[in-house]
Image (cartoon, rainbow, N blue to C red):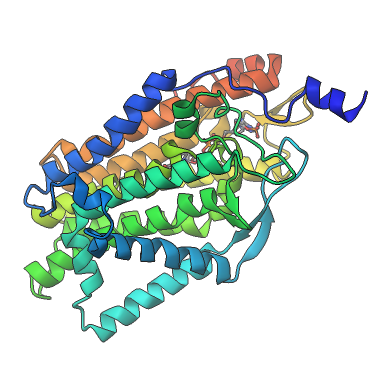
Length: 428
Ligand code: NDP
């Protein structure tokens, strides 16, 4: 069989036939609803926030240059750090054209530099930190700018997927339907890159995650410096900064783990991910800190211990279950019970992975609950994170089940009989 015949039989980029999120209409709805929702919920929690209500102000970068320039500098400087800072080289998962992409893993040097810059700025400005004050005061405007930026970036990646010289780019299996809105939303190209700069991995871990950290710090700074004049700090606000700061650095420092995750390995980079990474993560995951910055909530020692213990339990389950699967896949845990599949690999059905099919999701969800509890039961709005995360994890579990049942066939049926619970043992 000639190469042309093989390609005809098994095209590199098959057409997408299964639609998610309700197809094109669902994609359109989410693209309009979610941006409005992020601004709306931020305004509900901080109703006194000042911002321009004129849409033309944001659409014309000359008029809104005081917010556009800092935002673009933030994105640009992090991109330069990502390119020049040292790190180790790792390969991603095997792609459909039998190649693997090279990634530079330098989360440690990036995090170290950011902490160093923050420390120096604190020292030089004697705690005034005008950049954090700017972030705090222009929160809503930056939120809107990030939505526009995510829109432009997704549009750039969508158009770029059609322009190539020589080798055809690998498209995401889910984002090649031929429908402009749907493909733009899901992401047409699997790994859009500019030279060796990988847009998707960068956006997953740098501009959004680190902006979330800075927004939290801006709230803490507002409480400690502006409100309490360096005298005291609210315990709930300090706690949410510590818990989420730990989680953010854990993610950035262990970035190689992301290379095998669905987002990097199988999803395209469209508006869903660019908006999720650049807007949804920083501007909704910070809601507890934003709320606490204007409604200082004194938790007291017992609640602080309870919340910290819940986060520790969640992190322990999440971390040790993920590590166990990773060690097992590397052949380090031969004594654990498993099912030999016809594909040659094994499915672990012992220890954490005997309790449920995604026990790691349960740990992650407990972490989300601990964060929401820092606002105690003063408002239901800050619990949006746990609700959203439960929906995301349920949707992810369904997608993974479909993938595994297609991949492993009868072996997956046997596995499901041995490990019947999906996420929470004895409940679901
Ligand atoms: P999993 O870590 O559960 O990985 C699922 C994949 O692992 C399957 O597709 C299969 O892949 C393999 N697998 C599943 N069960 C077994 C088994 N019993 N034995 C061996 N291999 C198995 O899911 P994710 O990749 O979705 O999530 C990873 C982590 O990231 C989770 O802890 C999750 O909570 C977290 N996460 C966090 C998010 C956030 O916003 N904070 C968002 C999404 C995820 P194969 O067989 O092909 O190797």
